[in-house]
Image: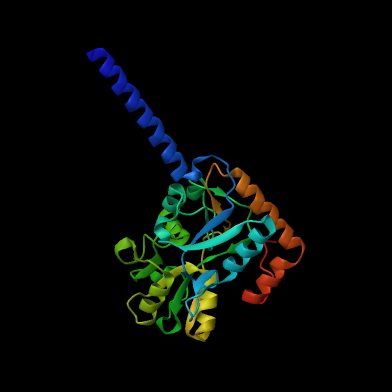
Length: 271
């Protein structure tokens, strides 16, 4: 009698295990490798002008926003934009909270270990921005000075990987880290930092919009130029192929140029 009861109990437990497993699979449809989603969730830093940011009405706008819409229109997929903490972008991607990272996301050797990159769609430089009144016009001029950078940015990654350029000479041998470049610019304007290591595309747009280009130095240093691309999960090769094909199509049909001229006044596609 006891053996029969134990047999029945084991059967019930096994059945529950199957139900739980099935339930978990249904709750997380993105567990299948290389499955192309019908709706793609784009993760972005919503303060990164002019790539993806909120306008005065709170609407998400920007070059990368328009570009993503054009790409997924071409692929026939819906697109949703999700604001994220930029320092957690790869974690959000791994967790399935987002499907791609698309917001002035630079290809680096370190990031290539974690994500699959699309083809390059734009080039960028890391620059040092200083107030003209500071008389700092070179990277060497930052010796003993306070530097700012964005946490999780490719600029800060270069800062740590090539310490001889800035890290070894700035105050405290480190940078003051900000959640967004906008916060860094506020401190730069108020004299709390002496220089800001930043994407050139951001610096140009930000200072142009504020009519302050003549008040600041935008200094190109020894860092190599960067490639902007879309970050995709390693096992989502099919999605990467669709994005690459669509990027090529909109470059050939003139849509990419149209979007570029809207935001930059010129075609910024990689030469």
